[in-house]
Each structure stands twice: as C-alpha cells, then as structure tokens.
Amino acid sequence: MPSPNCNPRPEGAVTELVVVHGISLPPGNYGGPEIEALFTNTLDPDGHPYFAEIAGLEVSAHFLIRRTGEVVQFVSTDARAWHAGVSCWQGREQCNDFSIGIELEGCDDEAYADPQYDTLNQLVRCLRNQYPGIQHDAIVGHSDIAPGRKTDPGPAFEWSRVLARQSQ
Image (cartoon, rainbow, N blue to C red; front, top):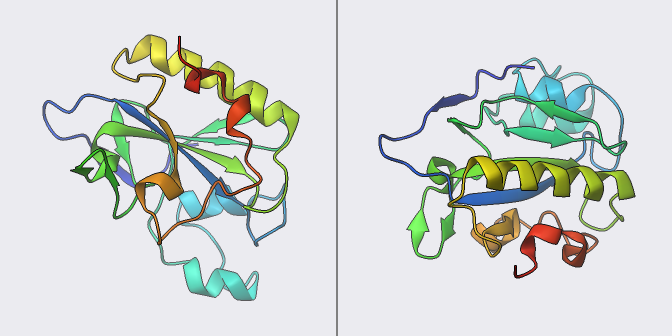
C-alpha cells in the first residue's frame, strides 16, 4: 500500500538501522484500517476525537506488522520513510536517512502478539541479508532514538524475543 510520505535517501546513505515502533489507532484499538489511512493521508479527522489531532501528520513506515503477523509495506526499503522524526543513534541525527521503520500494531503497555514476533524476526532476517550494514545491535526501539519524546514500542515489548538482537 504505497504511502506518499517518503522521499529518496540522501546520496551515499547506507541502511544500517532498524527502528521498531508501536502504533494503534485509536490508541488501544486493533484491526481497523486507520493505520493505513494515517500512512496514506486519508485518515478521517471526524472518525474519532483522537484523529482530529493527528489527521494532518505526514508520517509513514516501511512496514506494519498486524497482530495476526500480516505484513503491510508502505515504502520501499530503498527509500526514506518518515517514521523516526527528530532522532539520534550513536551520535548520528536524522535516523530516517539510514534506517528502516517497522510498526507493530500495539501499544506500550499491552503484550504484543506471538505472530508479530515471528514475523518481525523473519523480516529483520531478510533485511539484514539485503542490507549487511544492519548489525545485531542496530535493532532499536523508537524510544532509543528519541528518548523523552517517544516511548514505543514500550515496556510490554519483549526484546529478548527479537532474535536478530542476540549476538551472533
């Protein structure tokens, strides 16, 4: 499902980071079309009071992993998705330039679903094959690159289940 919220990566940019996010729209609700609508700029601001606050945002991610494990791709991994915002990783700002954003349908304080971890691990394995610059310690949360501003994927996310983060 193509998102208009992307642009080319800067010339010479090397993909070296995977950023894991958590999202649900409205907060705490799962399974509807609202995330896709947000990432494609078609979210109805009158559909829920929360949507009026975010409907004008131009955001995207490369991938969304639904609670069922289904993957939706919005942006080519060769392009720059607009998922990280103001961000910094290992002293480097503008993480969108060199990262891939993966949204998990969920929220900070509710357990993510088993199929999401399975799919996330498969997806990260594929990404690391495609982009060898992504090392095992370069799988991070949005909260890691935007501390104080973002909290996702949150304390309910089990990092120990992300196999790519284990040393190899």
